[in-house]
Length: 398
Image 1: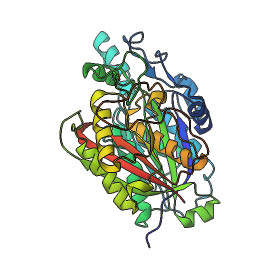
Image 2: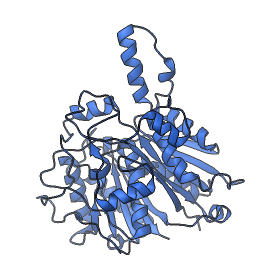
Image 3: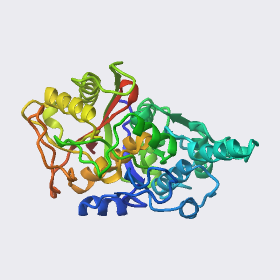
Image 4: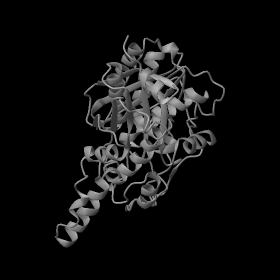
């Protein structure tokens, strides 16, 4: 029997909190982190709300024990991965440990600063600001900070990036290639992404309301989320206790469009179906779906129709947590896998805040009130990215 990938700890930093406990408090209280940008220097500050982590780069560096000159994505990654990893650091001698970190922005924030100076002064500027531009440079900075070298990789598949890093980590533990993995991802806000999404005309000028008939678009966010996965040998050596297991996963692609999901959610449906098959579960076994739920017309419709096709008249409790954090792009799958883990741990389903009106094309609606005392055995977490890259994870109570 292949080793199982047990989730033993989590790390988070988002617009609603600087660690797992703070984020959980905000989720329970229904407290959103969407608001006016404070640290991102953008022309759209007064027009486009975002889910920004309420800390400067210097403050993030102090939290993580790193360098304020790092890209903001790396600072966020270091905070969340350190929280997840800290209880086990120094206990892993002889264990094969991997770091699987996803992002889509890389060091874009520093590159933007470099470029502005370069254009203005027609000079080279600080070249150190472009050496961490690519996504892998962020991962290497953080893996060195954590002291993890056995296996280090970066995944960048748009909004499904972090889910795919968790999937790959679970596969490597399942194939006895690693004993431990820190898996998830991070992304910071940048001018490039904010301007790019605004060009696509899919940003809401008010706090977003996913899966509402009158939804107008998404809010971009930033943050990081990581799971620590272990096999039984590692858990015994590290004195760790399992919260849940990564029981199912799938990555599919319907190749429909560069940025849009297929109208019927073909890729979404395939990802969910294959994840269920991998986990050996029926649709009726799922207790909660953490929806991709961006708040755009296309995404929510295609995901909603795909869920209806799989679950029929018995759609389980479902909600999008992006109304709290914003859409954190490459970090979203990791952040929401942590939320799924917390739902299992504490028997809680988080509300889909700001929802008001039933969508016309689907017969089901998301959970709009906090649910406590739930017996959550299986959580389905969806992450659907640009280019049709669709991923679903299933977390199951161990």
